[in-house]
Image (cartoon, rainbow, N blue to C red; front, side):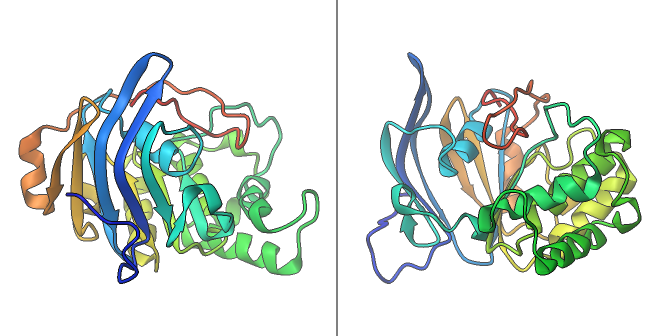
Amino acid sequence: MSVNPTDPSRNSAIVVNNLAVWLGNTQILRDISFDVAPGETVALLGGNGSGKTTLLRAILGLIPHRDGIIELLGTPLEQFNSWDQIGYVPQRASVSLHSTTVAEVVGSGTLAKRAVGWMRAADRKHVAEALNAVGLADLAREPYLHLSGGQQQRVLIARGIVNRPRLVLMDEPFAGVDLDNQAHIAATLNALEATVLVVLHETDSLADAIDRTIVLRDGRMVYNGTPEIAHSEGTHEVAAPERTHLLTGMEPAWTS
């Protein structure tokens, strides 16, 4: 689907037009075009190595794109600076957090709108509300590394929504998560009053929330439409390896 990002009648939360991304001498994404409407929940599917995480990171400006246009909340990516309106949820933390508490991990999500080392009372309130939303308020003072994998993922979701963002991008929020934690996560996502672009292995856990699916294959978009048809495109995959990103310390690898 080709879009016109300069059309003033558009009110898209995300616009991607003719996007191409290279990493070194390898082209990872080519000719990607789609938009996401405000309030829409879009699932991004595709096999391992199809370019899903690369696409998310390009949209966030974490890796450069060679060609094409990206807009967030009506603003070109190159001019965008309202990062407190964007929530990002990686697959899981990929850096040793030592004795960092759950509340401190979630509180790091407020850094987009405050000075480092200083948290306002309103921010502390938002941290508590975000942890309550994912059902972990009673673990606020626990070391993050003491939690189960599913609980850690819920903490990262709390971190991604702590600023009450207008747009949330999530990379495999159910990866390695047991069924009980999947239910908690799905309930949280269903309750979000935000636009959501989420990378998924399969859509069952969020079937009631997903409005549209986009499928990537070999760096190209091969499907953009109703969720019911997307499975025929083949989306099975395995989890990608992770590496630490210097900006957030919680970034998955680009390879999935």
